[in-house]
Length: 573
Image (cartoon, rainbow, N blue to C red; front, side):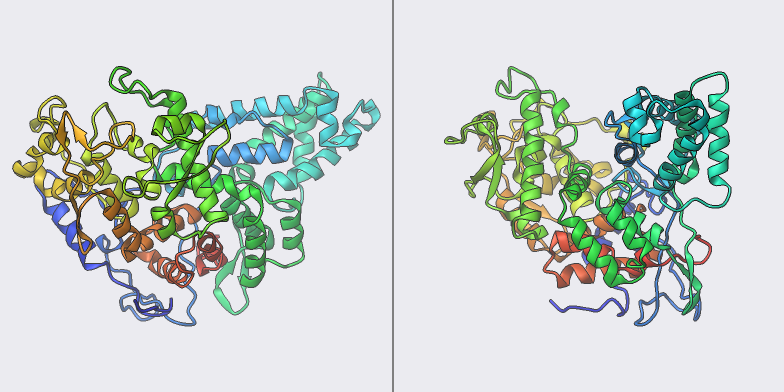
């Protein structure tokens, strides 16, 4: 496989992917809402992007800066919780009382979907009020804001309030205060203090601080690039914010703020140095968990329900342990193991504690602590064959090849599957779970019905390859006393597979799967759904990912080295 530099002509869609997409869109009953925000559209579905200087189709050239898009990003619920934890010591996760974010790019941090309605603004106010009250509830809490706040004398209250503001507000806004901002916040303190207490005044100020756009949004004004006047670069504080929310999901720490003030974040080398430091810190691990919780169907395993008679060994506790297995496995492989996406997909081990091992039927594991366990690689191999992933792609007591196949195509291969139209849903009923001895029998109608075959010819054969795993992810060789045929077909160049082990091996060796993984991380990192206009950013990330041997940890560092991370396009400040 040849390596191409990021300044070469942007790669077109893989032939197999574009052919599959065309067939899906032409299939009867498929609607093509492809191209809008959050649709999962491929770059080839959009109008050609032209070079603004030549009018020719956009090509990624050496020496040209491609800043990409930098939309205004609101803090997600998780980012809000992490920020008030680090800002005020509030560990109650207050933002989880807010409605869940729309998935948009698949990760809930797509700027296009993070708008604020009047209802959400009211809810944010309620959350801010609660945080402010907890931060000022006791003399000890007040003293954490500033030592002067403990039993402050009346004559010193205003000065102490200013001290709190000058300490707290720059951290909340993630930048130095502009002229007059301290006075505005002090005026809000005075309003709250009138006919009330010092604590009430401070709480009023904090409540306002947490509802400010400067807190809720990652606002970037940038500074002009002397060499490229049409572009702006993030300021040191803005770059610190970009780094910290990407790698830690929270506000910058003191070391990062000091680096910003010292100008250390003005170069790609300086940013790389701090990205490496931050990834070596355990605070980066929740980001890894969050990414995979959204990429994989594991976030709701603790709430998974199955028929107790059919699956007597399964419980919600087991579901929770399944999720923990996947998270521990991923963290170990990325931070202590080989660390490549291919090795994650084909690792011959996992992590279990005694209770989860008993569920799997694995002996020799004792205690509540998770420990590394070697797999029987004739039955399981890597991430995708873990029980949690298999159970999470099953929505009932019976396996569903459609859901499993769709997961592989959309999440791992970046092939969007258009939804069926309403009239097709009315005409075509899902398979009777009690008809046919096996899932392959039950879902055979999809290949017979022309209204279904257009889409299901791609999904179902992938899902059939996972039929050795039942609805709770346990390995099996028969269903209803009939021997299971786990053979399947992956669209495009991967072709036929004999079962789940060969499937994951082919996926791990697929360049298309590797590139899709880099794309998913890019969308997460930059808070958007990649479109054709982002192709130079996507190509730069993909090329760097290839050069690293598809190392996941290195991918996160390389995401901080793109033009999109270091520049703001004209009109985006």
